[in-house]
Every structure is written in C-alpha cells, then in structure tokens.
Amino acid sequence: MDARELLQISTRRYLFVKRLLALTSRDRTRTDRRIVLKKQQLNPNIERQTLKRKQVKSLAAFIKNLPDKEVTQFIETQNQVERLLISRGINYAVADCFMARFLKGDDPIFHLKQKSKTSKLIYNMVWMSVNVYESLWSMIQISFQEIKQICEQDDINLPFFKAWDLFLEIIRIQENSVYSKCLHASCNTVNLNRDLTASKLIIKSVWSGLSDDEELQLNKLTKEQPVSHWLKIAYSLCKELSKKDTLIADHYNTFRRNIASTADLQVKIFSDSSKGRLEDKLLSSCWVGGVEYRGGLT
Image (cartoon, rainbow, N blue to C red):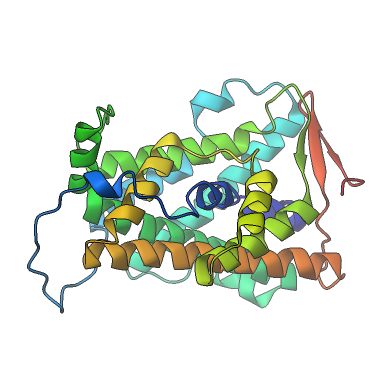
C-alpha cells in the first residue's frame, strides 16, 4: 500500500468538518430562543461519558465495513477498487486503535512510529481519528434527549430512537461521502493549496474566531465538501445548547478542540509535503470517469 496515498486519504477524512464549521461559525439565536431546558443538578466530579465494551466491538466492526454497499455497488474501475482498499485499510487501523484504547490492548500501529516521517504522520492521523470519533460520540450521547426535544418542536423528523443510532449514521454517511468523490462521472478536484488555507482558517475559527471576510473565504473554500445532514443538525444544536448547559458545553468544546487539532496536523502535513520534508510528496488530483489524475492543480 502506497504511503503517499495512505497519508493523502487519511488527511481528507475530516476535510468535511471544515464545511461543517464554516456553516456554523457565526453565532445564531434562532434555535437558542426556542430551547427550553430543565435545570440540572450537575455533579462537578461527574465522569465523562465513554464507550462500553460491547459498543467498542460493535463500532470497530462497523467502521471496518466502511465505505459500505451504498456506494461500493457503483465501482467500475480498477482505480476505484484501489481507493476502496486504501480507505478500508485506514478504517481497519482506526477500528483496531479504538479497541486498543478502550479494551486496554497494545498499540496496533506502533510500528508506524518507527518508520519514515510519512508513516509517523499516518500514525498521528489515525489516532486523531479515534479522538474525533470518541468526542463526537460523547457530544451526541450527552445531548441526545435535548436534540430530540428540539426536533419535535421544529417538526424535524429525527428517525433515531437512540443516540447510538444517530452516531453510527453520521459516521456511515461521512465515510461514504468522502469515498464517493471517486465515483462521480465529472471531475472532482483535490486541491492541496485550497485545503491548506481552509485548515488554517478552521484552526483560527476554533481558537480566536474569524472576521466576516474570513468566514466568506472559508465558505467558498469548503463549498464542495460533503457534510452529513444529521451531523450538521447535531453540531448546530449542541452549539446552542452549550450556551445553557455546562455539561454539553464541555463535550461540545472537546469535539471542537479535536477538530482543531486535526486541522493543525493537516496543516503540518501539507506544509511539510510542499517543502520537501516528506519522503512521499502529496499531489493535488482530480477524478475523471473513475480514473485519478495527479499533479498540475493549484
């Protein structure tokens, strides 16, 4: 498996979040005015919500089968098959790391730390994926009842009875959406310069906020990034709920920090690649008719 391809695909796993944060970067009060929360007696020593053993094994098996048949049924070319194998390989690594973290196992990808600079970056990105998924689950779990309440008030059909079902569907849609870029008949561009700029803006949006011009720029740069409808709803509502509920705020901010850390790592990867610091240089690319063409894009 080509190290450059592994790194390039792993850095694209969370580019969709750039679009999510771009769409929700400004404070909004529309939802805030309708939220009616019960006062909660919060235990200051309360432990973070985490995954149970059965959930960890179930999640690992679920992730290993992504992308799933919803998109893989449309594969027509060898390039698309190769991209699927790489995507599945990354997901296998993420799933195994999930089990290692929560079931107290050895680090299953430790060997990557002992290889090239590129391999070390892949190692960091895989573990960053574990952090993002863990914090996404915590945020959804702790706020799910409030999300259901608001959806009922707004006549939004929320077809999930449990927080777990919503969580899995968000992951499934996002993994399928990222992979499906190679299935489109038209040209779908991966532009490293654009993605580098977007990553820097994401980091700034989380830690210090963006100006109006910067928000417009981020929206423009991320307009083609797929975002799950349910992730957008859950994230937007958690943002508003966090203003009134300190426990939700804690989990919401943890998720945002993990996204910012992912963007920070992406900036390092793009920057090191452009400056020749990696053994395997990343290239901009586009897909046309199921075939990937690399290089020459700015």
